[in-house]
Image 1 (spheres, rainbow, N blue to C red):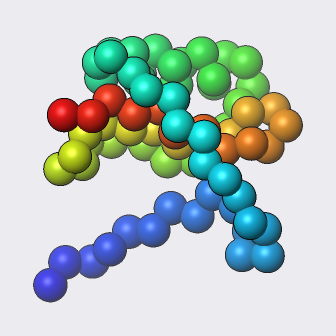
Image 2 (image 1 turned 120 degrees about the vertical axis):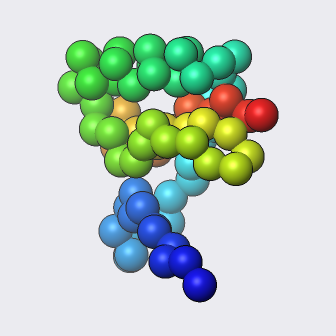
Length: 72
């Protein structure tokens, strides 16, 4: 049995909607992460490869959660 890693993107008492941003490639996900960091956003998880694709989760300056996703 493997260990499941859970990335918490919002405190337990907060209900959050994750907005999805489709990317055409892994390089586009990486570019978005770089732009978020440069703008002062917070990277919550990733970028990382999963069996279904490549993604990164981040928070914008208002605290909204976004996930950039390149699906396989």
